Amino acid sequence: MRQGIVHIYSGDGHGKSPAALGEAVMMAALGKSVMIIQFLKGKGLADSEFLGRLEPEIKIFRFEKSDLNFAELSEEKKTEEIINIKNGINFAKKVLSTGECDLLILDELLGLIDNSIITVEDLKNLLEARDEETDVILTGISLNDEISLLADEISRIETVKIKG
Image (cartoon, rainbow, N blue to C red; front, top):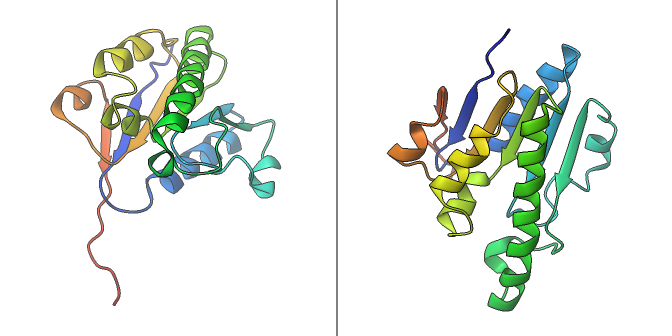
């Protein structure tokens, strides 16, 4: 039986989500099932007509209702969205515990920790619910030592030069 891995794409550079999406396409090309759950991105990829054509191999979910990025919301709207985000986390836990997909991408999940929506302990519990064969990719800007210990692989993506 194959052991699934936890891979983290982090750093201040652009390209973490596209790198994860590239992994999704590669897995789908191998006949594997992929789910992507996006957090904190407003509309994000969920409304992309192109990405919709990737179903059923790649399914994209977004539980937040607002079209704006989380950081742009009023405090009242943030409170509402936190409930939706936690529904997304519960869905992710169900997906992981049932082995419903071969790869689960939790896009911008690390940002949930940065925004105090979930804790590192919540992330540990989420990953512990995982079917042993399921791969998980987490993305986000910040990465601390405690989160690093949860990963099998870490890719740091940084901006080296901005043409100006």
